[in-house]
Length: 90
Figure 1 (cartoon, rainbow, N blue to C red):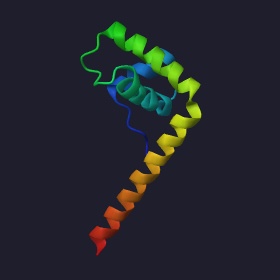
Figure 2 (tube, helix red, strand yellow):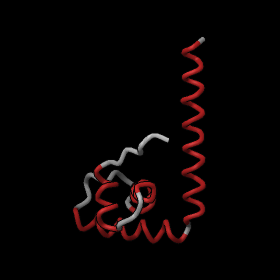
Figure 3 (cartoon, rainbow, N blue to C red):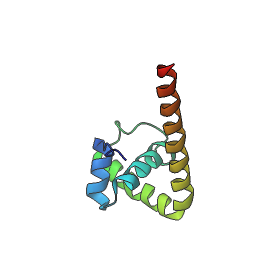
Figure 4 (tube, one colour):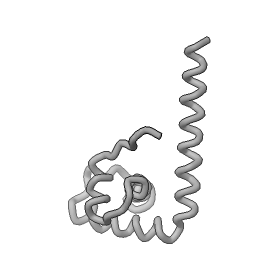
């Protein structure tokens, strides 16, 4: 499996929580979609830190749901890449 790209927000999340890159990716999505309902670039540093802790608690409360969703999204992405690759061969 290719090395996972980690963006600046995910790097900050890993630094703050000491979590894995996969958890950081889920936490970033939870922050965007459930905590702030917005992009993260307008949040202050303290808001981001509080949002990170809140998103971590949400992830821990429903980890199975978030991990299942992440696996499904990854599977669909890989299928799309495979189909795209096959369409270029034809």
